[in-house]
Amino acid sequence: MDVAAVLARYDRQLRRDATALPPARIERDGAVIRWLNDAEEGGWEAVFWSDLDESTADAQIAHEKAYFTARRQRFEWKHHAYDRPADLPARLIAAGFEPEEEEALVVAEIAGLAADFTVPDGIELVPVTDAAGVERVVAVHNEVFGIDHSWLRREMLAKLGNPEAGVAVLAMAGDRAVCAARVDFHPGTDFASLWGGGTLPEWRGRGIYRALVGYRARLAAERGFRYLQVDSSPDSQPILRRLGFVDLTTTTPYVYTPPSVDNQPP
Image 1: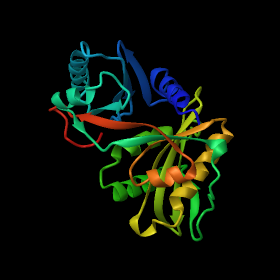
Image 2: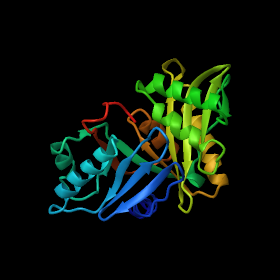
Image 3: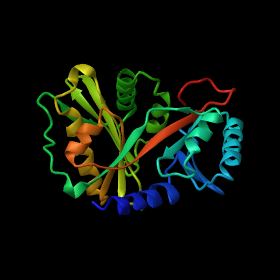
């Protein structure tokens, strides 16, 4: 893989020229691009691309704080390691943003995946097609990641019935959901993105996560996408690299919570 070329394609297609499907929407405002959410009770919102330098960064940071404070919205500044200026993370922290865990941005060409994606014995992969399935996804995420995923419930319910926007899938052991994962499709780009995949502790090490990667890769390939992209946690990075994913860069969420908003995930 030509890493520099794929990173440039990623930056152009999924950041600078990004599109969104309802309830999300894109807002371009000068030197930044925002990801906003019009779900009735809110949702994930972010500054996910910027074009700043040492002379403009602080003023833009202050502007974004004021903008999202007016919306009464907790948001993240999604920082990529190549973003300018080089000291942007320090400026964000000085402005009251809190850094979360750094993730590796990894990409694989779907046609080049050569792993064994066999579903483990005793596990069935079931697509989410109704509100009951959404509740199972949220419950698994809450248990695995230890934080409230109410925002995910709202977004998934809004997307039900539109499989061209994305698909969620459950790994079921009988009537017990033991893992949940999602794939988002980005129309007009070469990329589909993978999210979630957290597995209950007692079910790890059996190949469930790997099988879910294969399941979602097949869905993306059927829709004509060339690449899979993942913002991968330290837990998933070794698995993804063994499957053929390549590191492009790193990303870090810097989160700002306005004083008027409870310090909870949206």
